[in-house]
Every structure is written in C-alpha cells, then in structure tokens.
Length: 427
Ligand code: IMP
Image 1 (tube, rainbow, N blue to C red):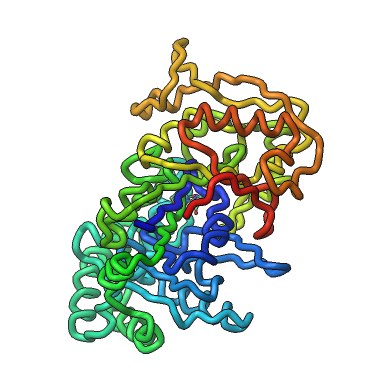
Image 2 (cartoon, protein in one colour):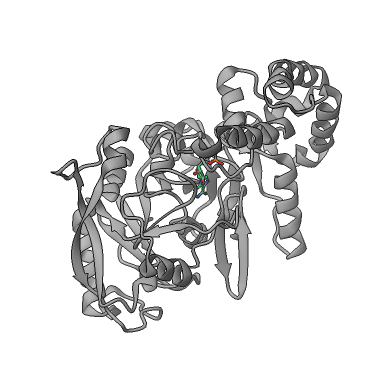
C-alpha cells in the first residue's frame, strides 16, 4: 500500500521540504497532519526559492493534490496570503483540500500565545507566537472553532462566545489586557468563509478512497520527533504529534495503511526555542554550522542553536516512529572539518547511557560522549551516487546508519532539487 510518512527525526528543520518535494513528482496526495504555520519549509525549484509555512510542500508539484488534514490548526489569514503569494508567482493552488474538521487559529489564540509566553518570563517555551498551543488547548478543552463552523453563523457565534467567556476573564484579570469582542472575531472569521469554501472537503473520505484506488499518499510531518507533545522533550515541545502515529489521527487513515515511515535526519543537529540539547555548541564550530548551513528559522527568523550529530536521538526516533528509512540531509555542510565529532551515548551523573532517558531531569544532565570521525574537504554537491562521495564522507554516512538503526536511503548534498543521492527508492 503506497502510503508513506515523512517526518523530522530531530527537533525540526531537518530539510523535510526538500525531501517531500523530491517525492512530490511521483505522489498523488501530500498531506499535512499536525501543526500549523509554526512550520517552515524552504523548497528550491530551479532558481526559485519558496518558503512555506502552512501549505504542504506538494503544492509546488503540478500533478499532486495537497491536503490539510483534520489534525492541522489553520490560521485563515496566513493560509490565504500564502496562497495568493504562490498565485502571484504562477503556482496553481486550485487542487488544495482542507479538512472541515481542522481547527482554526483564532486571533485571540495568537494573543493568548504571546501573553502567556511573556508571563512565563525565563520559563518560557520560546514558541513561534503563532497561537498553536492555545488552539490545540481549545481543541482538547472542546471549545475550539473548526473550519466547518465558518459556514454556520449561529453556531460560530455560540462557540466564539464560549471560548471568549473564560479567555476574556484571563486576559483582563490576569494579563491586564483589553477584552476581545465576540462580534469582531465572528466578523473576521466569516470574512474568510467564501474564500476558503472551494477548498473545504471531507478529506478523510478522499484520502481513504485514494488509497483504495492505489494512489500514492505522502504524509508530511511538521516540526520533529523531539518536539512531539508525547514523545519529545516536554514541556519544550510543540502542542501536537509530529511522530508517525500523528499521521493516522491527523488524517483519518488507519495504521495498517501506512507502508513506510521515513525520518529526515540532518547530518548535524539544530534546535529553535528553549529546552535541553546535549550536543549544542557555543564555540566557533557552532557558529560555522549556523553560517554554512544557513541555520536561521524560516518562520521566525531566529538563529537556530547548532550542534554535532546525536546518534542517541536518531535511535530514539527510529524506535518511536517505527522508521523504515532515513533521508540524511545537509551532508555538504560538514565539508571542510578535519574531524567530525558524533555523539554516540550520554554520560549522566557519571554513568554511560546508550538510550534516551525518559526522565526530564536525567536528560537535562546528559553530557555527550563523542567519537571522532575523519572529515573530508572535497566539494560533494555534484555527487550523484554514493560511490561519488569521498571515502570519509561514505564512512560518516555508514557510521550514522549503523548507530541510528535504520537504512539511510537518500542523502542531501545541496539545497537544490537535484542535489540528492538516492540509494534506495522510497516508492
Ligand atoms: P510552538 O509550536 O509555536 O508552540 O512552539 C513550541 C516549540 O516548538 C518552540 O521551541 C518552537 O521553537 C518549536 N518549533 C515549532 N515549530 C517548529 C519548526 O517548524 N521547527 C523547529 N522548531 C519548531
């Protein structure tokens, strides 16, 4: 059954856009199943660079139907401006499908995200400030607004009233903010209804029928495994499930339909926002990774924290996602180092630990145990096959594969669409 999941194996920003787009030409549907416009994909097509936040990257492949699944949270103003930005550049977006069950990021949830972070002070999560957490909180609290609510003014008004009831108390009494008016919110949301109407559909039915007809469906995760609300470095996580199980709940496709789960793995590690990061570098090497790798957030413009490759995390990602393959990205960024340290285990309170500790306290105390691998200096961006890579680059890839527990089936050697070595086909 041709249903594949592509997800981040680290803390996000592994280069998923490139991987999804590479497959986009041969897949019929590309589905986002969680997150919202907190994600950021950079996709390079020819000499054009596209930054996508909410739309599935399959939107750039003409034969492909992009789908925003029920598990996604949608900011309508961001969605519409992303669509018109693409239309202005000649990209046809008419095939897009949006689940009527997806939740809407309301303007008050963006406000709540920002004021909560400010209130937390030095304990803040470092969220993207896009209203993601509060929108998922409303969903779980059963006071969320769904895309389908835009088409019933009376229901929409009642739901906004219910949501603002408590929030206005909080905003005025706790955060010293002005209350938000129900009418103003309802009016803004209704203003999106007609513009979104052509895209709204029963995506659960569409996707399951597509799979029955042997169409190829690709599920594209936002963020990454270690940012998962259940399996990540809680509380420094996002509020959804980027891990493989999320593809099922966030789309309405059952687990027996998933044939392959591909983890996108950067040849080193980055993280945005707060939280533990054992291999983080605070020296010239970290600065060099940031500069050469262009490690600046697509969504927030924040510099990413950078560090060496962490095999403990990669093994963990293999386990919690049931990964069948890895797509190793940005190998070219490591060109030029004489020796490359790779974290093979942690030392926690004087003991060597091979697997990711479940305890937050232990993880905060984890110190990386490094093994040094020999580097290479040759330009690898034109390598087309594994054997084109310098011997030491081959050995680096093989070592990572052995430590991470799943085969590396593709390697990114540059940002462009063609700068990829395919070892095993994903389809
Ligand atoms: P939120 O998703 O905006 O609530 O932010 C929660 C945490 O996830 C913060 O540390 C963010 O920096 C991080 N985060 C959210 N989206 C991404 C992403 O696409 N890449 C990397 N980190 C992200």
